[in-house]
Length: 377
Image (cartoon, rainbow, N blue to C red):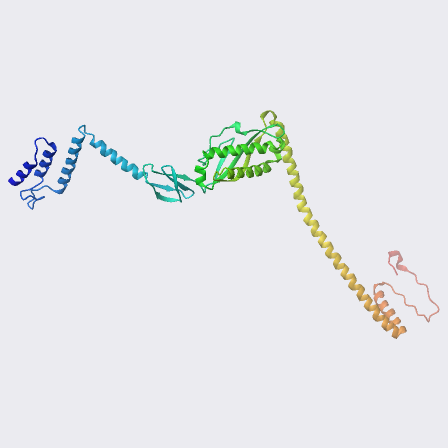
């Protein structure tokens, strides 16, 4: 024990608080044989040693920071570690990809799933929904729309358009699109959602301006949608926007309020016209097939009758030819045979028959007693 005290005295300096605290810990943690713990249990257990080391570190921090802010530093370090761990991973949904940037520079494109990146803002991952159908609405907004790039709606202003005949129309429409190239979508165009909105509005005003107000409101909707889609696709490709426009769909198209009633009447007349046309087509489709079937039946019947008459005529020709051969051989016999066969065919249809003997000279007159009943002799 005396040797240990001498060792402690050699390390003690009257001007060093750090040395005093160190010697105090060393003296309290050693036994008489100079080793940690003792078989008899008089030494200090390892848990107490760890607590003493922590206290020693805190004492040193207090010496460096006399105001007692060491706990704040520990809290800051722990919070920084938690933030780093929290920002080191991210999840990409199944309908999206992530574009990773390092200090603002493009690094790579990441597929759906769980991924890791450098924390604390060194790497940033931007989620882009490449497999989702997105849409921009013009002149109206649908509650709960899922397009994250939907720009603020300008309301009535963007629906006011001038037609080719210098009339006004209020046009509402929807542009459905997909993000085909996320890198171009994020970096080639500033504010791609707003840019798409400007392009769509410009094209729609151009297309509407090439048509009369009647075409815009009544009969030209499909042509307007088709032409606007083609021009929007061309401009999106030209500007390298990284999007693919799938459909342009017109919604409500109305005239200004002062003339809206008149246009409604025109629209009703157009609908009535379409209704009558559809009914006529229905009747046409119902009657024409029946007429076609009857025509084919009549043609088949005529063909059958023609073949029948031809066969009968050919049979008569063959029969007369055979009779001619027999008549040439025996004219008298043939004539008598023809006469008998004719009588056999005719007599069964006669109700009353009179047989006259050509050898009898006195023939009594026959009184037709059944003539009053309308019977023929």
